[in-house]
Amino acid sequence: MKLPKINDKILHAVVSCMIEIVLALTIHQWAPWQRFLANIILFGGGKEIYDMMHPDEHDADWYDLAADAVGALIGEVIIAIIWNVVMA
Image (cartoon, rainbow, N blue to C red):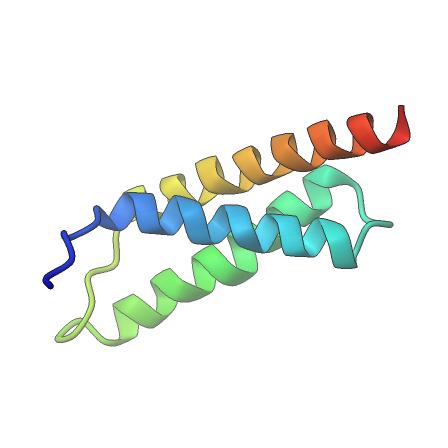
């Protein structure tokens, strides 16, 4: 069975969302904006730097970083909803 190809930007957003949730659960003393920036700069930026250093295998793309930011934001929204439900 051949799986359908998933859009690269969707993958970036989903992975960034998951990273953001893991960061929120493990480094909960950080403010949401600190986790968001750490995710985008370290993971998203790191991936794009890797892509730039390997142009024969990967394409560096600013839109990938934008998709990472969207995913991280969605992750923070999910965490805020969960914490508000649990703490209520």
